Length: 165
Image (cartoon, rainbow, N blue to C red; front, side, top):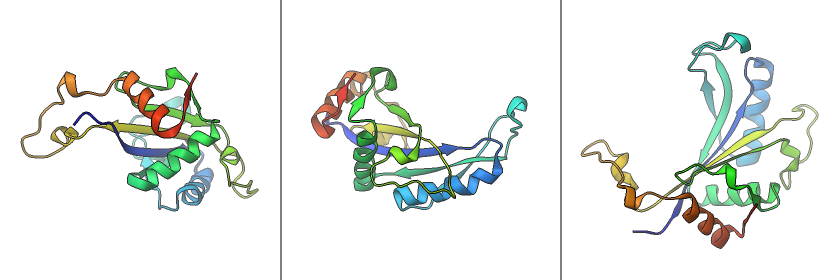
């Protein structure tokens, strides 16, 4: 019950108020993952960026299981298998950005898409975490069962040969 598992990997491209780049973001995520991306709509109004609730601002793809593992290895290769310690939060989740998609191994520059970056968000879990997500008899995860930043760092070193900087 104490083992750590990869829960999900979310790839996200935010284009803000530039609607013409929205379709390019969708195409790029499809090429990287082979999955159909989901549209992300704004939840808050941001007048400086001309964003209002309900307006499409990006695309995301959520991967689980073996696909998540494969894509995560690819994303770690993009950052040379080096992860900064400040990329982790207190619960062991990991988030980092990739400035240009052409840095990803196997991806070639496409003049139609231009240059775009993306965000990678990784979540980890333990067996028993379902109690916080189920509909009936939902419970909180006790402190002693939560994942810490240090445990995830050891997991990544062991499973993905990642170096912590």
